[in-house]
Every structure is written in C-alpha cells, then in structure tokens.
Image (cartoon, rainbow, N blue to C red; front, side):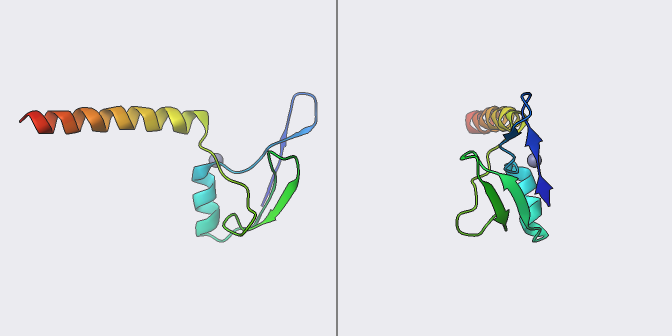
Length: 81
Ligand SMILES: [Zn+2]
C-alpha cells in the first residue's frame, strides 16, 4: 500500500501510518511504501528492521487522555468503597 501525503507547498510530507493503521497493516501483512520524517522512502513491512516508528494522531492522543482520566476516576471510585 502506498501512503502519500502532500504539504501545502506541494512537497511530499511524512506519511508513516499511525499506530492504529500500523496494527491493521501488520495484521494483514500488507507491505507499505511511505515517506519517513527523515524525508526518505520506506518500503516493506512495518515490523521489519529499519521500519519508521508510528505515532498516534492528535485524535488518538486526545482519546487516550480521556480514557486515562475516566479509568483513573473509576479506579478512585472503586477504591473509596
Ligand atoms: Zn491511521
């Protein structure tokens, strides 16, 4: 699968799949072609040596924060019983 992202100036931007996409791509063993933060192209499986590191998206980070605070509240509520 080729993942391509273009910046507003038309140059290719980093297109490393996010953590969720990475999980699914690996589950189905789909090889990837993507642009790395070092501005090189990576070709291969995302779990092979030299594969770029996936990051969570802004939305995924926000959801993780919401879930973490919800879990902390639940834990606190259970602890005071
Ligand atoms: Zn994604």
